[in-house]
Every structure is written in structure tokens, then in C-alpha cells.
Image (cartoon, rainbow, N blue to C red; front, top):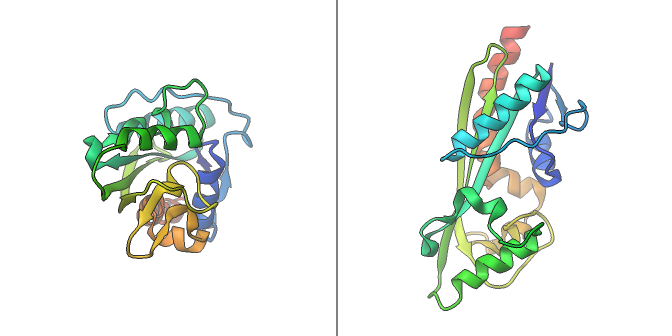
Length: 200
């Protein structure tokens, strides 16, 4: 059975593939099945955005589909960038580095620690049109200096006090134990197991 991972983000794909690699599932990307789609994320919650993507890709491909929506919530910024994490910088074609710089600009003059969390919601579009959701979160702090070359997005400035490392300093194995996406994917594993059993 194929599971379509509804993202072209290479960082996300690597993480999800590492977490589901032991399943009797062929993990495929939109590119591999010849799908070039941009789904407008106009939902009001992570779950709504994940569902929009999962549904659109499942309908277009006819495959079991996993989509996620995630964001960084900084307490000092009233939970921003949140749903707009990927589109936070006003620069056209902004890079991850641009978004990190823009976030740190907003925190200039705000007393530390800058407590924050990553949240991720996964939507699974199942064969009979059913949609199931799983959530994961990871608490930490934003720091002003970038550290680490692993990871993507806001990982280099997301500090995990209990480990004394940023998310970008973690090896994939460590990240896949505690990241928000890892926790959401781990919560989705029993659902996928059930789908596989039902299709056997």
C-alpha cells in the first residue's frame, strides 16, 4: 500500500520517512506520483489546514494521504507566528533565514526568556473518505543566536533547555524522539497500523 506524504519540504519528508520507515507501506511524495499542487491554506487552525491538504492530495491521487500543518508559537508575541510561521516574513520569496531574522527583530527589547512551542497537527485522509487527526507539541525557548546545521525552519533558534541544545543541533534520532512532528507521527502510527490490518 502507498502512503502519499503531502509535502515537498525535504526536511519534513526526511523526518516522516525516518519515523514510518519500518511500516509495510511505500512512502511516496507528490513529485513521485506526478502531482504538482499548491493547496491554499486558508483554515483557521492547524487541523483545518492539514485537512485541506490531505483531502486535496487524496482526491487527486486516490491514495491514503498524510498531511501536516505546524507552527511556532512565541508567548511574548501572543502566539505568533503560529499558523503563519511559513509565511511570516513580508519579503517575497523569503528563506528560512529571512523568517528567523524577522522573528528576532520582533523580539528586540523584549525581556528573555522567550518561551515558545512548536505545534504540529497531522491529518490522515483514509480510503473511505474518513479524516483522522493527531497532534504533537514541543516546548522550548527562542534564543538570539543561531546554533546547529541540522533541521530547517526555526530549528536553529529553538532552544531545548533540558538538552542544552537547539533543535538544529540534534541528530535525526534525537529529534525523532521529541520534536512536535515526531510526536504527531508517533500518535498516527496506530491509525496506520489499523488501516493496514483492515486492507490485508
